[in-house]
Image (cartoon, rainbow, N blue to C red; front, top):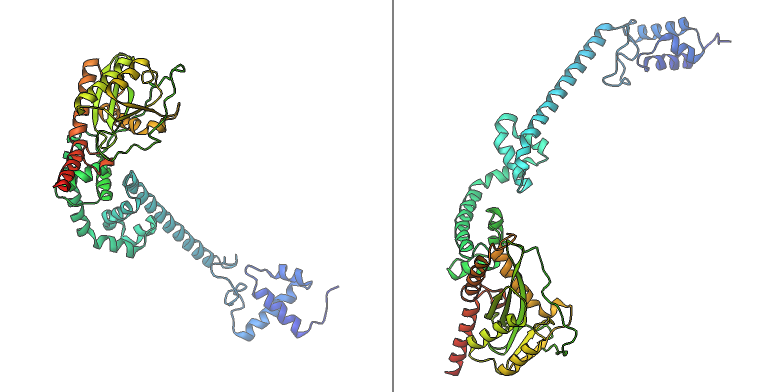
Length: 415
């Protein structure tokens, strides 16, 4: 049963509820309150006349409690139309913004194919600021406008640095070509220092990357060390120390394969002086018999004048452990030393030397071609290695130059 006598407080609360509910109807509010629809309507109209508000106004039309952007009541179709038109304009503006951003990102894609992403974004903004505006471009690219303007202010300095890098790249390219396309940044830097150009290795490495000047890395490996279980055990005297106080006291040797286009191999045996890493003896053959390593040691004896009293270190390959090679060492006055079986680190310096040889002569080719071409390429590299190629163990001096300076210093001290 509905109440017949309502307090002034109840009436005021009922009116406030109706007025503060967007899109409310007398019927819905009256049902919630449990009163007659006309009773609520009379209270609302009476309150509006008291406040001087249009009695026909929709609920919450002039109230502060109404939220912005809320839909108008169906009793005011003009207001509803105005709100819909505003919404359409808002959606159209949003669509135009999205279309512009898609266009910007599509154009920006080619700027990020490689290189510095941040620099590419700055450059893109600079190239398209006339078409889209700096503010919009920086928003889409995720940049701070002040950072962009700071980058733009340094354009002259960057241009000058780029010209300097181009000039340096030309000098590097000449050195790189003279090295047979093999020198990396450490040796190129040393070569530049010798010509009077003071530049650090980090900059040389950066310029080489920027101008695509690179060396080569060897990927393939063939086993050339086959131990003979019947040979007498020879102690390892080097203990992985591949240095020497002077030339002619410690030598090391090894065998490596040289692939041919026919699928066969030539084999190279070398003898290196531990002091300067100079190649004092070598031999190339189509076999790995003991004669291969014996010929290399004989060449070393001829080039040095004598090997008497020197120590020669090798791996446990059957050639180095043979009776023939043992007799030759005894004849030349050479003390033998061998690394542990199956441990490449015990002959690491020779392993590294052969890796450099093949990396720089093959330059990622699968083979050397025919046997004659192979011999010629290896002979040319070995010769240049001693006379010109800079070695990191020698402070980036060639083996010949390193030994020359040693002898000069020795004579100076004697004087």
